[in-house]
Image (cartoon, rainbow, N blue to C red; front, top):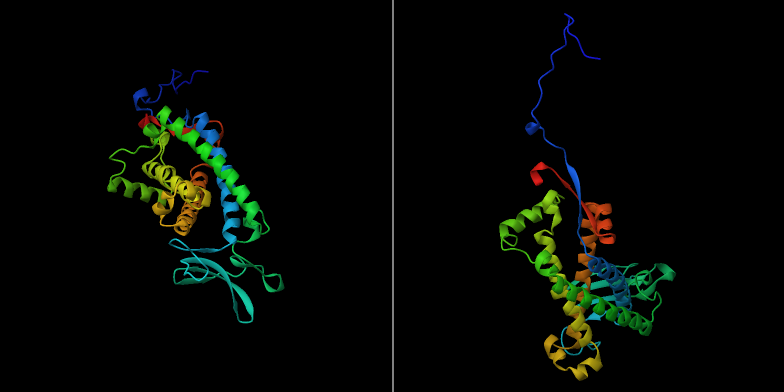
Length: 297
């Protein structure tokens, strides 16, 4: 029914807001963020990296010390070691990095406590296989190492041919300026993640981190892994000169492995904090939802 005023006449309408002054609310836009090749190689990498780390710790347990130089005999000083020492009528674990010593009983060096204590570098729950078996650990490690190399080569080939590296990972001059990087670090520290159109692309920190992992850490992992093989050294002796000896190569391999593990932990943390469901969906289906407003368009 039509509204009437006190005199029985049609009531006047109230003031209206012009359409141009109406601020639209945010809208969701679905974009294709990851190609099929990126998604497939990503999940194969997850499998390979997980098993490479666990089997690599099994291999490390066979001699839980790291050296610089050509040899690395038992009498040579190690810059890194996980050991078990007798102290106070018992055995305790000890992690040593240079001159720094950290007691790690029950975790590193000695697993378990009391009568159940076992001398072991890394505990059984984090190695493949769980029992001490160097030969089996090497078989697991080498199989998934070559699968990782093949998968990574496919990713690199597709990335170059499709322009993915140039289009999505190469940072601009403005992005790598100190001022811009400081702002991005501050935003990440405050858990302020890109919105709107900015969410369509990787930020500068992501680009730089991915480039370091893809083109520095992973090639170093591969080449130092080859250098630790006596057969490869016989065929390509320049590898020993390149890395300063097999023991130096082993140390670099270990440092790169844990650098990549740290990258994965931070990456997973950012995935969770910036939207677990949205990020996981984008890496499974390719679809990523961004929230846009009038000012973002």
